[in-house]
Structure formats: structure tokens, C-alpha cells
Length: 428
Image 1 (cartoon, rainbow, N blue to C red):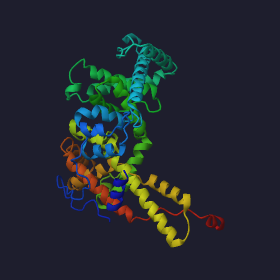
Image 2 (image 1 turned 135 degrees about the vertical axis):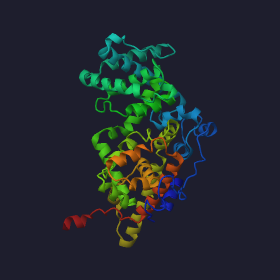
Image 3 (image 1 turned 90 degrees about the vertical axis):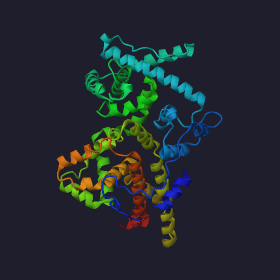
Image 4 (image 1 turned 180 degrees about the vertical axis):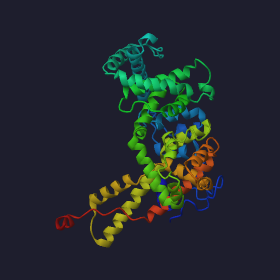
């Protein structure tokens, strides 16, 4: 919201990452801007909608999720928005129609690849419950015809499914929801991953997708809804499963660490770990394996709120606008659209996700442990020792603190280069 952007712009004077962060559990988070007392409850959730069922207070919802999370009984409804399944502007009736249509489409897609790739398995895994009115029947026939228009690459699809069959039995088995033999939730997990891989060949399947889907499936507790939430989420982050996407994220993290704690980065370089590849799992899986399951769910929804990123983008735009206006006043020259375009391009190249600041928070809270690592092997042991041992609220508090320190640094950083004027281009 404009208020949050203004607050961030106002808060945003350079302090390094290692100020006051000596070692494990020593985080000092006095600079936290947000209290985590706010939460999405049944009362606040109802207040976000208009009389037609449109979610009209999107920024307020995102802020509440970021600051306090979601009441567990509401997660199934809220996550459908955060993960891109439901459109914020859709009415209650429109959502009902879309959900029914997408559920029918998922069943048709799932049943078709099974017919092609696993005919001996008997095809359909069972129908979902529908009203059975003529419109439902028509939608089901149409979905079946559309599914058969897909040209399935059988070789690639079988390859994906072989890996999925190995990964699914190892996914969150200590959680009651996925425990035991002949667990239908594991069947759902398998079928959703396979359906996604078969019909999204440009992305396919990669290890780690099972970890992300398990959280979504646990909350949705419905095969078709989980599939559509997963598709919405993957639409936003699928580039991270490609080599270029993750390399870019790690390069950005390295750049950020260099700005905030150059001493730690130099130490990691000295032990051949300055590429930060050990952070790959943290970022790719939204830190899911680093925290206990309940905390992982809470962190996942906080990351999916994108509240801090969206607010900081608006704050950056406000600062850029003020810089342009100040330059125009000083130089007597209207920078116009070209100046705005240059600012936008600079922002895109220097935009960081909140996940990067969570990495910096872990570095800050456990800085002494990282500085004591003498080689890649001891670094591996140090990072593994943190798994399910970190306090989420401590890490979140430090991440916010580091974020706002970085914002203050960026205020005093060099402004993006001014675009060349027509006269300058002519003289060049």
C-alpha cells in the first residue's frame, strides 16, 4: 500500500550486516519495522471482500500475512489467492465456476496421460464429485477432448515419472498426513507432479518440486485444488528450476552479501564457497527443509505474500521520482519518460526477493559459525547443523532488520545513470 511504501521510503544510512550479529542465537532485531502481532483471522478475512465476493483489500491481506501469518483454518482459502489459483478481482460466483471448470480439466488431463503411459493401471483414479447437471456433463466432455489434443512426449514423460516415483515415497513421511503404506495422499502427490510434468514439458519435473507441493497438498487436502495452486505457484517461480534462474539468484545473493558483509564473503571465497551454492536449497525450496514443518508452512505463506517486495518497489519508485524531480529543478531539464524508463530498468536489475534477505539473516545470526568454517566440508557440517534448529521468529526479525539497513544504504547509493539527451546523442 502507499502507506507502507512511504514508511519504507522514510526508513530507508548504511550499516553493515555484521553489526551486532556475533554468532548463533545472538541476533539483535531492534530495527524491526513490523510487529508480528497482526494475523489473518476469520473476522479480518471477511472484511477484505465486497458484497459480490471480490477481494478488494489485496495489499491489506498481503501485509497481514507477512506480519502475522494466517489462522490455520483459513489457509485453504487464503492460499488459493496467494498462489494464483483465484483472481483477486473475481466475484464469489465467478470463483465457483472457475474452480469447477479447473477441477474437471485436471481430471481429464490426469486420466489421459494415464491412459497413454500407464494403460495397465486402469486409467482413471476416480471422478470428483459434481452436480451432474447438463453443464457439468458438457464441461467434462469438452475437457476430455481438449486433453486428447495434447501431443505427449512419451519418452520425456516416462523419464519424469520414473524420478517422481523415486522421490514421492521419501517426501515428508514423518508427517502423519504422508505416513504409512498405501497412503492416498502419496498417490495424489505422484499424480499431481506427473500431470504437471507431462503437460508442462518446458519445465518438466525436477527434484524439490515434491517438497513444495507437499506443503500445498497438506493445506488444500484436495487433489485438484492442490494441482491448480501448484500450477499457479510454478508459473511465478519455474525459472528458478532452470540453471540460469538459480545462477542469477545466487549471483544476486553474492552481490547483496558483498554489500552487507564483505568480510564474510571474502572468508567464503577463501574456502572455495563464495559461489554460495550451499544456499541453493534454501532459495529453491523456500527454506522448507531448514525449519520444522509447521514453521515451514508459515514461512512459505509469508514469502508468497510478497508484501515487502511490493512495498519496497513502490518505495523505490517514490525515491526515483523525487530524484528525477530534484535533478530537473537543479538542471532545468525535463527528464520525461526516458528518465522513468531508465529508473525502471535499474530497479529490475537491482531487485531482490525477501528470500535473499532470509539468507543474509541466517548468515548474521550464525555469523561466528560461518566464520569458523575452514573448508567446504566444515561449511557443509555447519549448514546441516542448522536444519530444523533455527528459530523462525528470530530469523524473520533479523531479515527485516537487514532489509531496512539495505534500504538505507540504497538511498545513498549512486542513482541510476541519466538517459542521454537527443543533443548528447547527436554530438556523440
